[in-house]
Length: 307
Image (cartoon, rainbow, N blue to C red; front, side, top):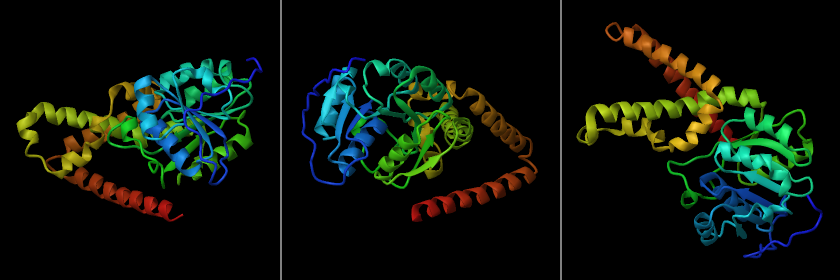
């Protein structure tokens, strides 16, 4: 990339008050729920930072009205002087952007992503990036509905933010990112990409599959008239069933081995329960175990909020 400086078309001048940000120019590629919330959180915590939003025109207009970004463009060339680039598009799109990122971003900017799987993009970063400094990332914050219109600055408050450095990761880049997301109220954790994908297959990817399959099965069986009679149990259990398939297809395809293994274990449990419906021995065992693990989940969540 040439060393010529590109003047950014600043639409809104950043506030000069407030605590200095670890990064002065933050480019967010993809302003959906997560990317939009990162932009809003950055403007709230680090008002001095210039936030550059890269997306299509319709999304950018919404982001500007929400005061989430200072610069709006669908041209990646406007990221030239960014010192932090956040890949917040769907997983496969992030991979495509990563491949040509050094054509658009100068210097030794830090690059991170927000994808739900880490092995493939971390491997791709080693092959694609020679100058830019990549650190895999995954904020565990979400909402029932996606899109910039549902973004909010407190989405990551008291929520884990996972980082997956590799052997080539710069320690300084990781330190700055930890400081950056801690400013959002997030709790940073560091793990290996393999460990991340194995753990998230059970913690996130399997629950999504189960919720969607359950809602599909029940809805197909009872229809809309039957659903009118449902209690809170079905509604609470299937909260994730409204998630968009296009995003989750990428997640499953880039973690199919771990998700497949987690799904096999779950199917074994279901089959054991089906064979024991008349006796109830297995039902007692699974319910007792589930209650214990559910209490442990709530206890761990309370501990993390008090830290």
